Image 1 (cartoon, one colour):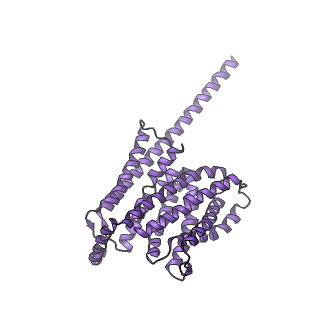
Image 2 (cartoon, one colour):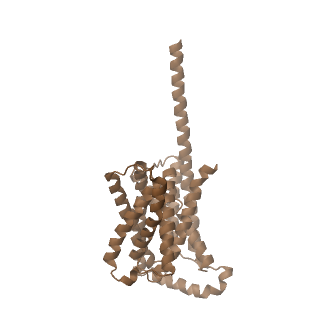
Image 3 (cartoon, helix red, strand yellow):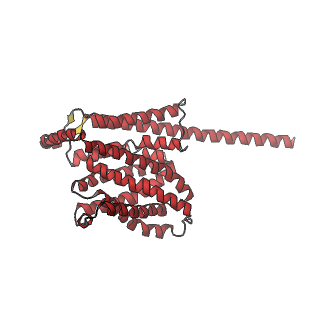
Length: 358
């Protein structure tokens, strides 16, 4: 595998690291009392400020004209796939935890795959080995998500954080009691709804990019429209001026990071990966953010990892590689079929030439 073919894998790994940090830092500011709707507005506004000069400098001359129909499509993509998805995700994250947010986001591959099937962007031949592998991979991924949600199991202690075990065990019991509450269930439902909108955004933006391939302008317009939409939502739901103030604290750091790095850099990288390999390839790497979140929480925050988290993570990784293997086999067979078709066309042409000469 040459360097060019490795780039999509490198990009999706970077994207998942970015999202891992986002889960942790967003949960921290929500616990600190920051309004989720105000947070979404600020991150989109900061992303627009960050991307607009770059888009103007790099794609000012190469970008195609933006038609009214394409603008409406981007507006609707921003409304449902970005604004509403982020708002629902923020509310759900305030109700639940960063680990659960990463875990439910791991269901995105299954959501995106079925949405891509619905829109005719993916094929599933169950009778073929590749189709069976993809279906099995999606099923195993969903099994991993269910394991993470429903099974906790014994707690696994890290030797480095042994002195914090008793306190963390108490928090773990509190989480068990919280998981049965209405707020926790509401958070899970909202998180799944957010992921459905996110998956729809991943699938449909691939079509829009074919019409409007300027990725920087495309991403900047997404952020601009989303910041306007999220502002009206936030101002309608939060009238307290003090809730809009940003100081020199973690709130400002979170807004800058999520605006510049997540919404700015990660969205652009996602558009690049979708253009190169498609939406399902991108979404199949979302389980990595769960593993990164579990690992960083255990090492940096000394949180206790349950056996259910380990088993669920293993199932997600197995499912991930099953689907990727099936897709790689399909692409290889598709390439072989094209070569065979060209060979047949060449044979036909050669035979016709022979007939003419004779």
